[in-house]
Structure formats: structure tokens, C-alpha cells
Length: 219
Image 1 (spheres, rainbow, N blue to C red):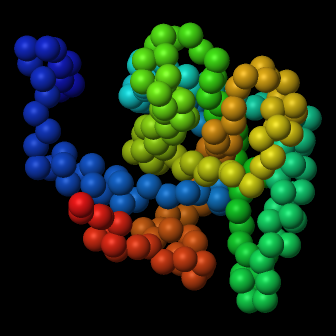
Image 2: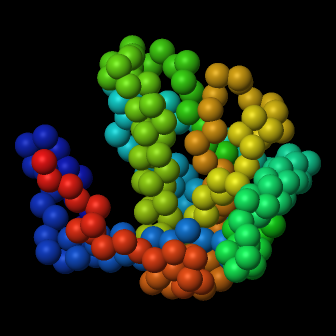
């Protein structure tokens, strides 16, 4: 039975749910290898609904999701990625350059759904509460929204890949969007070809996951 919470009857998350939540966190992956199968519109709506439930500074909700469907615009994004990827490769040398060149760093060719996720830094919503002192919290709010979408997608068996090897201004121009919008993420969304518990970059020996204790400072 679906539980509809109310102010007087908030949900109680039992041990089973808690364990499943941590399992979901462990299995969230940055997906690069997609099947071309379409995603049902109802599932895409659920992902966006999850994204909109994210916290935001001052309740500003500055996220703007742009679904990129036009083939010409998608080609433009792929060309921007290729150029930026060549430039990024040039910054590495030796074995690290060889390894970088072997990595699949985007699913732009195969993913059936693309979202360019923007932060509207000029939004009046929220009346500047919190973001007057820390404007970057607008972007942080958008990232929280993306994480919501990402986890919801994993729960539905859908994969998400975050493409950051892009020139934000070139993407803005390719999509013909307002100049006051700042690119936070370009997301590839689709059903993954395979699932792994460990991140691909860890599996390919690019980097190792840090121990949680090494990230905690006490003052």
C-alpha cells in the first residue's frame, strides 16, 4: 500500500528501507555505455519530478532542464565535446595520456535522452534569500536536483552520465539559450548496457576511491 504522508503522520523508514537506500547510493554509476532503447515518457516525468523535489537556497528552484532532441543541436554538442576532449588530452603525458585516450568519457552517441541542465542565476524566485551572501548556492541547488534525478533513475534501472568535457559558452550558443543561464551539467540518460558496483574510472585504474575517514577534518 502506498503511504501518503501528512504533517501529523510522517513516514517511518524502517531498517529494510534504510539498507536499500544505502544500496542505491552504492550502485549509482556515471554511465557511458547505453542501449538505444527509448525511455517511456512516464518514467522521464518521474525523473523530473524527483529532480524538482530537491532542496534549493531560498526555495529559488534555479534549475532549468533543457531536453536536447534536435539532431543538428546534438551534432553540435558532439563536436564541442570532441574539440574539448582533444584539448584535455593534450594536457596529459606518457602513460596517463595513453590511459585517458582509451577512456570512453561520454555517451553522447548512444543515449536516447540528453538534458542540458542550467542554473538561472538571474532568477527572482527566492528573493535572494541565502544566495545574496553565497551566490554559488544557486549552482549547489542545481547539483542537488541532478543528484535527485540520478538516484531516481538508478532506482528505475535507468543510467545517467554527466558530461563535463564541454565549453559552456559554446553549448549555450548551440542551444540558443538566455545569456544569464549557466551550464551546470550535460546529462546523457538511457538504459545501461552493463552494471558494475565499482566506478569505471576506478576499474580502469584512473583513480581510486578515497577512504571516508580521510575526508573528515575535526577542529
